[in-house]
Length: 200
Image (cartoon, rainbow, N blue to C red):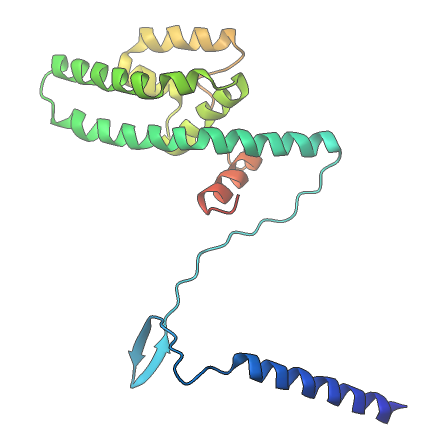
């Protein structure tokens, strides 16, 4: 019985190896192009592989929790580009701001940038839901390292920051909300990393 099983195994393995070798052989006129480096006279293929991030599987306690996670993914995919844009614009603003000599020039420049942003993105941002707006506030803190309140205070002054904080409070938000990647915002961090790597 053991001999019969061994013979069957050898036959199956032989067929598999033969079909693999037939599929893997190249025609004489085939060319494979890849980057390579020459090291001590040997040509070594040099292939760039995209980084892939792997997280442990989430085990949801209920269907409702799974739906909330799916909604969070959808909302983050919508607002994350705005958070990246906010970081880029803030970096640009800081570079240009440093070149300006007087406070009057700085205020005029800030107002011009603000108007440009409102004209370009205002209508789209107004369409965000309250939940998406809260996520955007957290992501701005993640991207810039400053809460929205701190940024407003720095760019527009204390009065403006307090005013907009009061408005945000009316809608159940808080401009002083800090991003906590290891705590309450761990799902957000996980999803953002996957978005950044193009995996979702």
